[in-house]
Image 1 (cartoon, one colour):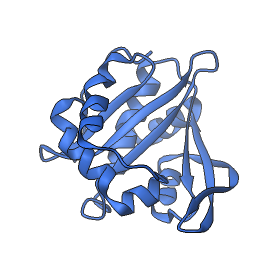
Image 2: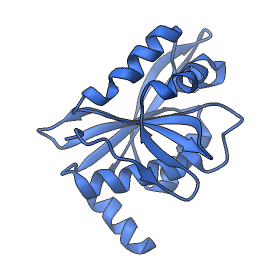
Image 3: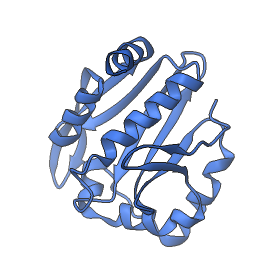
Length: 184
Protein backbone atom coordinates (compact mmCIF):
# COMPACT_ATOMS: atom_id res chain seq x y z
CA UNK A 1 0.00 0.00 0.00
CA UNK A 2 2.97 2.31 0.68
CA UNK A 3 5.32 1.09 -2.05
CA UNK A 4 5.40 4.60 -3.54
CA UNK A 5 7.36 7.00 -1.34
CA UNK A 6 6.08 10.48 -2.24
CA UNK A 7 7.42 13.96 -1.65
CA UNK A 8 4.66 16.14 -0.17
CA UNK A 9 5.00 19.94 -0.16
CA UNK A 10 3.23 22.37 2.12
CA UNK A 11 3.69 26.03 3.00
CA UNK A 12 6.06 25.46 5.92
CA UNK A 13 7.28 21.90 5.47
CA UNK A 14 8.19 19.37 2.83
CA UNK A 15 7.90 15.66 3.55
CA UNK A 16 10.60 13.56 1.89
CA UNK A 17 11.21 9.80 1.91
CA UNK A 18 13.78 9.18 4.64
CA UNK A 19 17.24 8.13 3.61
CA UNK A 20 20.85 8.12 4.74
CA UNK A 21 21.03 11.89 4.24
CA UNK A 22 18.66 12.29 7.23
CA UNK A 23 20.65 10.16 9.70
CA UNK A 24 22.19 13.11 11.57
CA UNK A 25 18.71 14.53 12.14
CA UNK A 26 17.33 11.20 13.34
CA UNK A 27 20.27 10.76 15.71
CA UNK A 28 19.70 14.26 17.13
CA UNK A 29 15.97 13.53 17.48
CA UNK A 30 16.35 10.23 19.35
CA UNK A 31 19.10 11.68 21.57
CA UNK A 32 16.91 14.53 22.90
CA UNK A 33 15.70 13.76 26.47
CA UNK A 34 12.42 15.67 26.01
CA UNK A 35 11.63 13.83 22.77
CA UNK A 36 12.37 10.54 24.55
CA UNK A 37 9.90 11.43 27.33
CA UNK A 38 7.17 12.54 24.91
CA UNK A 39 7.52 9.37 22.84
CA UNK A 40 8.14 7.03 25.78
CA UNK A 41 11.41 5.85 24.25
CA UNK A 42 13.53 4.17 26.90
CA UNK A 43 16.31 2.80 24.73
CA UNK A 44 19.27 4.41 23.11
CA UNK A 45 20.20 4.15 19.46
CA UNK A 46 23.72 4.49 18.16
CA UNK A 47 24.74 6.28 15.02
CA UNK A 48 25.18 3.09 12.99
CA UNK A 49 21.74 1.78 14.00
CA UNK A 50 20.19 5.11 12.94
CA UNK A 51 21.99 4.92 9.59
CA UNK A 52 20.84 1.32 9.02
CA UNK A 53 17.26 2.20 9.98
CA UNK A 54 16.93 5.14 7.58
CA UNK A 55 18.78 3.32 4.79
CA UNK A 56 16.23 0.49 4.75
CA UNK A 57 12.88 2.31 5.18
CA UNK A 58 12.31 2.63 1.44
CA UNK A 59 12.30 -1.17 1.11
CA UNK A 60 9.07 -1.57 3.10
CA UNK A 61 5.75 -1.39 1.23
CA UNK A 62 3.83 -1.79 4.51
CA UNK A 63 4.96 1.56 5.96
CA UNK A 64 5.70 5.12 4.92
CA UNK A 65 8.57 6.92 6.66
CA UNK A 66 9.00 10.59 5.75
CA UNK A 67 11.44 13.23 6.93
CA UNK A 68 9.89 16.57 7.89
CA UNK A 69 11.97 19.35 6.34
CA UNK A 70 11.64 23.08 7.01
CA UNK A 71 13.90 25.47 5.09
CA UNK A 72 15.87 22.43 3.84
CA UNK A 73 16.61 21.39 7.43
CA UNK A 74 15.49 18.12 9.04
CA UNK A 75 13.04 18.95 11.86
CA UNK A 76 11.49 15.53 12.48
CA UNK A 77 9.84 12.48 11.03
CA UNK A 78 6.31 11.29 10.38
CA UNK A 79 5.41 7.66 9.80
CA UNK A 80 2.45 5.53 8.79
CA UNK A 81 3.08 2.02 10.13
CA UNK A 82 1.35 -1.01 11.64
CA UNK A 83 -0.63 -1.44 8.43
CA UNK A 84 -3.65 -3.73 8.69
CA UNK A 85 -4.63 -4.44 5.07
CA UNK A 86 -7.74 -6.43 6.01
CA UNK A 87 -9.23 -3.62 8.10
CA UNK A 88 -7.80 -0.77 6.02
CA UNK A 89 -6.14 0.84 9.01
CA UNK A 90 -2.72 1.93 10.17
CA UNK A 91 -0.95 3.90 12.87
CA UNK A 92 0.50 7.40 12.61
CA UNK A 93 3.63 8.38 14.50
CA UNK A 94 5.33 11.77 14.52
CA UNK A 95 8.35 13.16 16.34
CA UNK A 96 9.91 16.61 16.09
CA UNK A 97 13.50 17.48 16.98
CA UNK A 98 12.61 19.12 20.27
CA UNK A 99 11.74 22.44 21.83
CA UNK A 100 13.59 24.51 19.23
CA UNK A 101 11.04 23.43 16.58
CA UNK A 102 7.94 23.03 18.76
CA UNK A 103 5.12 25.56 18.30
CA UNK A 104 5.97 26.52 14.72
CA UNK A 105 3.17 24.55 13.04
CA UNK A 106 5.51 22.00 11.47
CA UNK A 107 3.81 19.02 13.07
CA UNK A 108 0.30 20.22 12.26
CA UNK A 109 1.11 20.78 8.61
CA UNK A 110 3.03 17.50 8.32
CA UNK A 111 0.07 15.53 9.69
CA UNK A 112 -2.40 17.31 7.41
CA UNK A 113 -0.21 16.66 4.35
CA UNK A 114 0.16 12.99 5.22
CA UNK A 115 -3.55 12.48 5.96
CA UNK A 116 -4.51 14.22 2.69
CA UNK A 117 -2.12 11.91 0.83
CA UNK A 118 -3.17 8.72 2.64
CA UNK A 119 -6.91 9.22 2.25
CA UNK A 120 -6.58 10.38 -1.38
CA UNK A 121 -4.23 7.66 -2.66
CA UNK A 122 -4.98 4.57 -0.58
CA UNK A 123 -8.14 2.74 0.49
CA UNK A 124 -7.35 3.38 4.18
CA UNK A 125 -10.42 3.92 6.34
CA UNK A 126 -8.87 4.53 9.78
CA UNK A 127 -5.63 6.11 10.97
CA UNK A 128 -4.93 5.93 14.68
CA UNK A 129 -2.27 7.13 17.07
CA UNK A 130 -1.33 7.00 20.71
CA UNK A 131 -0.28 9.98 22.82
CA UNK A 132 0.66 10.16 26.47
CA UNK A 133 -1.92 11.97 28.59
CA UNK A 134 0.67 14.49 29.85
CA UNK A 135 1.39 15.70 26.29
CA UNK A 136 -1.26 18.42 26.21
CA UNK A 137 0.31 20.26 23.26
CA UNK A 138 0.16 17.18 21.00
CA UNK A 139 -3.35 16.22 22.13
CA UNK A 140 -4.56 19.75 21.32
CA UNK A 141 -3.02 19.55 17.82
CA UNK A 142 -4.49 16.11 17.12
CA UNK A 143 -7.98 17.24 18.19
CA UNK A 144 -7.68 20.42 16.11
CA UNK A 145 -6.77 18.34 13.06
CA UNK A 146 -9.76 16.03 13.55
CA UNK A 147 -8.58 13.06 15.61
CA UNK A 148 -11.12 11.78 18.13
CA UNK A 149 -10.17 10.37 21.53
CA UNK A 150 -11.30 6.75 21.74
CA UNK A 151 -9.95 5.47 25.00
CA UNK A 152 -7.26 5.39 27.62
CA UNK A 153 -4.59 2.79 28.23
CA UNK A 154 -4.12 3.14 31.96
CA UNK A 155 -0.59 3.19 33.36
CA UNK A 156 0.86 2.48 29.92
CA UNK A 157 4.21 4.22 30.50
CA UNK A 158 6.55 4.04 33.46
CA UNK A 159 8.80 7.11 33.30
CA UNK A 160 11.10 8.21 36.09
CA UNK A 161 9.22 6.07 38.58
CA UNK A 162 5.76 7.44 37.69
CA UNK A 163 2.96 5.79 35.70
CA UNK A 164 1.31 7.67 32.84
CA UNK A 165 -1.79 6.92 30.78
CA UNK A 166 -1.81 6.79 26.98
CA UNK A 167 -4.74 8.14 24.99
CA UNK A 168 -5.79 6.35 21.80
CA UNK A 169 -7.12 8.61 19.03
CA UNK A 170 -8.18 8.10 15.43
CA UNK A 171 -9.53 9.82 12.36
CA UNK A 172 -11.76 8.05 9.83
CA UNK A 173 -11.84 8.61 6.08
CA UNK A 174 -15.40 10.09 6.08
CA UNK A 175 -14.45 12.49 8.91
CA UNK A 176 -11.33 13.63 7.06
CA UNK A 177 -13.21 14.05 3.78
CA UNK A 178 -15.95 16.10 5.49
CA UNK A 179 -13.32 18.29 7.18
CA UNK A 180 -11.45 18.76 3.90
CA UNK A 181 -14.66 19.83 2.12
CA UNK A 182 -15.33 22.43 4.83
CA UNK A 183 -11.85 23.89 4.42
CA UNK A 184 -12.03 23.99 0.61
